Amino acid sequence: MSNGTMNGNGKRSFKLMIVDDSNLMRRRIERSQQFEELQLVGTAADGVEALELFKRTDPDVVTMDITMPHMDGIECIARLVAMKPAIRILVVSALADKATAVEAMESGANGFLNKPFTDRQLNEAIAELMR
Amino acid sequence: MLYEQELKTFVEGTTNFFEVAAQQPASIGSPYLMEGSPAVHEYTGVIKISGKREGVVYFTAPKAMLTVLLMKMQENDFSHETMRDLVGEVANTISGNARRDFGRDFVISVPSVLSGEKPEIPQKPGQRSFIIPINWRSHSAKLVVSLA
Image (cartoon, rainbow over all chains, first blue to last red):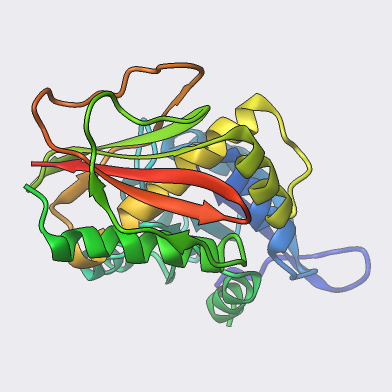
């Protein structure tokens, strides 16, 4: 995982990007994640927006939906990992078949969380991602 | 044609959604064959299905139910756009979860959302549709599954 950045208090912080075509879901993830060291740098509604946002903000951690317009999450994951191998990506998707989870991991994702999820499940998944 | 076991997949998906996302179980009624015009409420989230199966799955609910659902999700934005987002997300979640049983060749679209009276559901004429009735906190909604 990338080393993040040292903030003014001498603590390490990591930049978070949330990618989901649902504004409701983007707000949910932002609101529910409980990691002080994760600083939200932006959200995107599809893979194309995510790549543009990545170039501007250089996130360390990403939550990624799969079914999105313009560019889906699988393609976006592969492109992000190609640009920044140390990036950590948690897929957050309604697609519950094992083949999709395998495809996401093989594209470079580091974790997979199915929707619907509880706050606890989300935070456990992020904790695992950042280990 | 939709088989009983396949309908069960959608019943279980709907049950799971309300238990987890809404943090309160819903009462899911027995599926029944739709007759006549599509049964819709004020907001409808539609998922087109392609691949191994073709058709649509849609979740339709009244504004009052969606408002309470948003509150249970700790939301305080009850705008028209957020209602549309929610029905789309519910339809997306239940349809995506169905891939656990249907497999990855059960291809789901991004949600399209319809609102207002008598919206046109993109459905093939002659294709049979099953209604799964949902009752949650005195509100009623429906999940409709129409697959060839």
